Length: 265
Image (cartoon, rainbow, N blue to C red):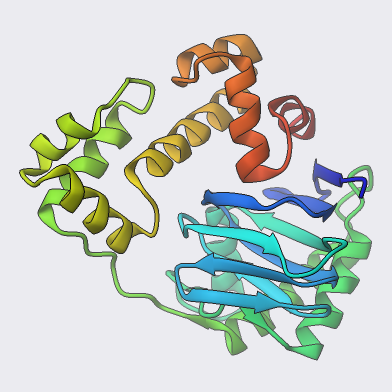
């Protein structure tokens, strides 16, 4: 089937929109934003920080910042979905405006909520990338998030990792563009390579290599947002070359760095 994925800046500040129709299986990754979306056609199965999740037509799908997840179609013909990605600062502002305290996250990765579905469809139809952010759009966004936070949100406890895994994460966070060997990371953690792999995957939901690729992806997205050339972004972010960076973007986000840069203009 022909894959169609469009990612663009919405008319509302701090919110990007995505429309996709694809049979692609996405590798484990995370986003810096909150995501809320709708499965329009087909069905998807995904690993998330809250276990395995199946979502079918009409289901609302949600993801929190930093939550490791993947996605694959459950049937021939792929699936189609729409997403809104909301910057955390905007999310928290909206939470306060709807009478909720800060620190709320989506409690479930998928929900069969007819009311929320109708609100999402209404908002998504209003969000044209070339249209001004009018009263109707702002109103629809607040109504959508008010219901989501009332029905499908909670205040999660702080993430707690073992000291060994925390040291490894800190090393990868501090120097994502550098080369890291499993042996060096295991020595830093003070455990064997096998135990590091097992413990890291159990606590974070991904391997050290996947985590490093995600940190490089996050670094690259930030540099692209600053207007840095794609060649310089690839070199600065630790990718072997632009082709390598393109593959990582496609595997995790479904779009190329060029498409991502275009969406930010």
